Length: 193
Image 1 (cartoon, rainbow, N blue to C red):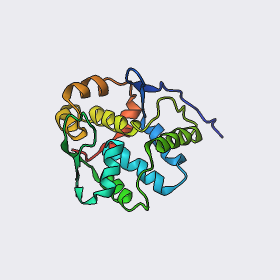
Image 2 (image 1 turned 90 degrees about the vertical axis):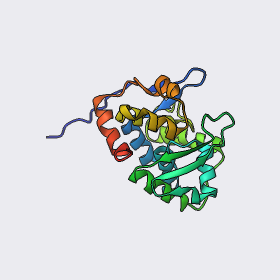
Image 3 (image 1 turned 45 degrees about the vertical axis):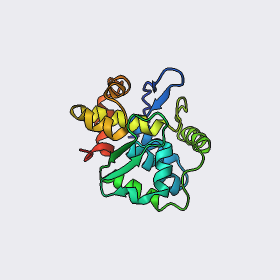
Image 4 (image 1 turned 135 degrees about the vertical axis):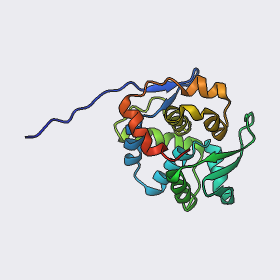
């Protein structure tokens, strides 16, 4: 007996005031990764996701690979108004793998406008609504997943991500993730603490 494919439509998660950023559910992240045609770009996407680094910070890391050691990346923020000008980004095993693959890439990340357009194109290829998908999506997605999975470790999370506690509370808590989302997040976040 053949069962029909069932498509469940879930609310798109957008966060932010002026130009809302898309927060991906784990199934959407997986669909997006699967739609990226080149492995090198998949590696770049996963490095951005698993580190939660700002785009400019990961570009900086490519040129400064010695700042990656074992389970951390030492970041000197490139953001003008950064809360923490120096911090350590914590990584789980998947994050360590993603960074290693990224650092072996032939080329660094492209200009952010190129990456932004690529993300939207790959989202359409994955049959995802590209609304709100931008270079900030991976960073905000991963921090949201960490906050959801490790609510008692907010201090570690916001320090690793270079935010304040208020930013973490205002932006990343109370998002409409389902029980299935929360279970699937573990694939990406387990071992972070």
